[in-house]
Amino acid sequence: MRLLIFLILLYLGWRALKKWMATHIEQGPKTFYEPERQIDDIMVKDPFCGVYFPKKTGVSLKINGETLYFCSRECQEHYLSGKEPSNK
Ligand SMILES: [Zn+2]
Image (cartoon, rainbow, N blue to C red; front, side):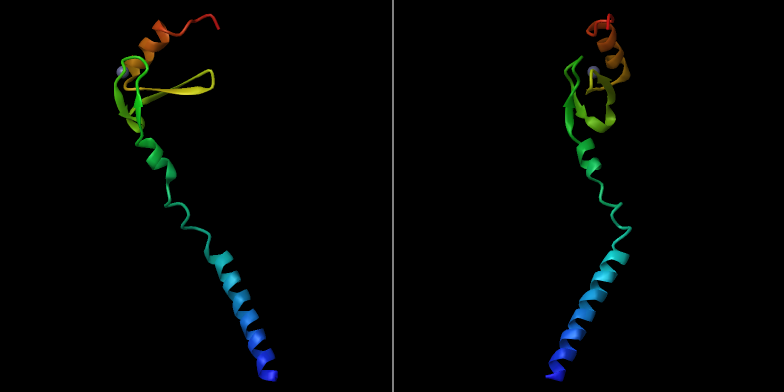
């Protein structure tokens, strides 16, 4: 009977130790998981010239809360000067 109690205590102690190790060691290697890298590789359409390009190579522009992506800064400027009304 004593042996059983000893084993239970040993088991609980081992579990506590494992939990302690998990909380103290599991702080750090979270940084090398980069979900944004995958998002950057999405192909987006330039709303000005209609060309598809990887999001990360484009120029982003925020208009009225939504983000638009252009293949180049020139397209962004053309879009702003041509399509976007200035009276806002
Ligand atoms: Zn373009």
